[in-house]
Image (tube, rainbow, N blue to C red):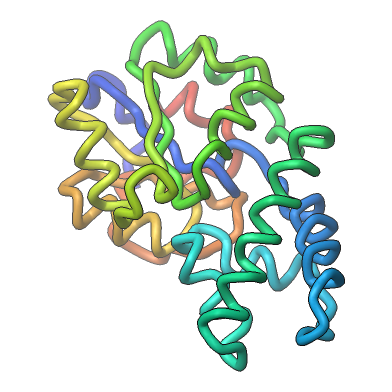
Length: 214
């Protein structure tokens, strides 16, 4: 694995959950509150369950979690979870990974920074408001905006901002596959929720390692 990728890229596109912050415990609280509102589900939501589906498109998450529900019921649960999630995170946020602000300060002086996530519409804006780090990022895109898969949203950012040498940073195999489909090299955030064994151009065990790698 290379020790440095300096002077290789002109821009960085970040995944959000498991890469910049961890909101899973508060998502558990929010989703459990939503589930408790319906009379056709009796399940306990856990952080392990939430982490296992983090990074998937928002609609796919509920297909995976509740395959026994019919489409109408599943959609009802999804909408309730989305509502509670946004309300709860608006108030409580998530856990920012250590060194995030210092890392963004360093990187933003050298690169154009973006976020692409498979989250619902408004979630990235919530993160930016909670963290107060919106000034570091030039733009963002998510599944909830157009209903497109992550690879297409990555391509949109690349095309919309005329990026010449971007790299994607994420923490799951799904992130790697999406970056690859979009034609971008991938840096694996090994401290997140997933595992990528090969194919990445770099691996970091903490956000602050980006300051040496890039």
